[in-house]
Figure 1: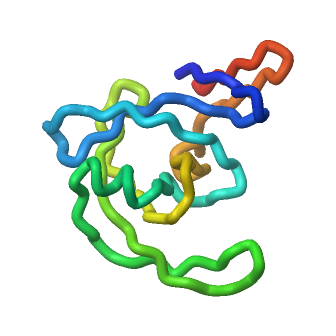
Figure 2 (figure 1 turned 90 degrees about the vertical axis):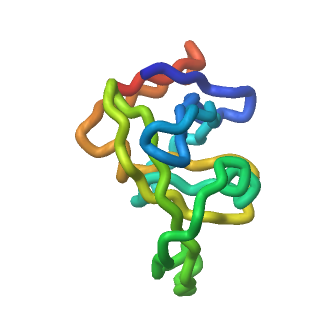
Length: 120
């Protein structure tokens, strides 16, 4: 999988996300966040556009130490020639985040001079 580094230094890639196993994919640009130990975080607007239904809640510890419960949803992602179910957490941010829950077992190379990202 390939991606790019934008003008702000963010490592980005496009991901095909589906609301159900056999539904049409929606391409979403995600920011690779190696400090996030989950799979995906997305703004509520993205979750609503996919028509996802809440599947549960996640107890999370924020960077400032506060504990909060976050809404979670299930979606399907095209990931290395497979379609896998992943947990997506709702937030009020602007850019979806891809965390180490999906990166584990893969090699991530972010080349800032070339402004490229490779994940294999």
